[in-house]
Image (tube, rainbow, N blue to C red; front, side, top):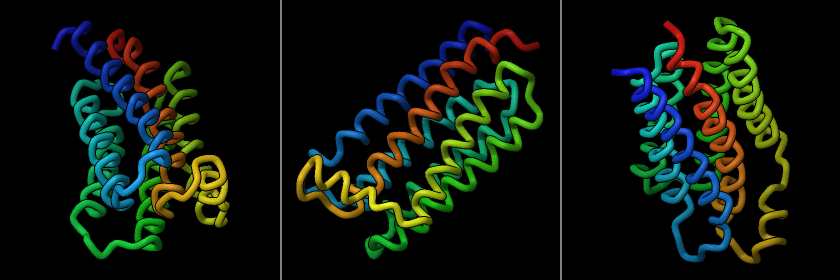
Length: 183
């Protein structure tokens, strides 16, 4: 793969994930969608995009693949389990965020200066989101106040996914030129 192609694939993946973040942030406007499916398909799409970017990466390919695979697995679990209610989804999203944060932290410990900052920022974002969910922060109340009646799953996780996706997409956009220039 040429350096330009590598850079283009990684940057495009970042842009696509940021676009998913915008979609996730607007989910509370949608009515009638099953929450677990919406969250599951968003995770599945983001994970597949991340895996494509991981294939193009040269630096931290295994940890990037672990983060992408964790996202795909979380999405598949939600899509394929018709009995997943609020608490199983909550636990799965928290686990997903912690696994991603750990993979990104591991990659940050083995990175040089320009990429390390982006890895730390993305990992810290995912970890902080997991802590917010664990603490019971009433995100759903804020979302319901802004958007009106919304599925509890969508109200709770739409913005969590949006924030995590922005951190991931930004990391990929910033990493693209670094990945292409490393030898």
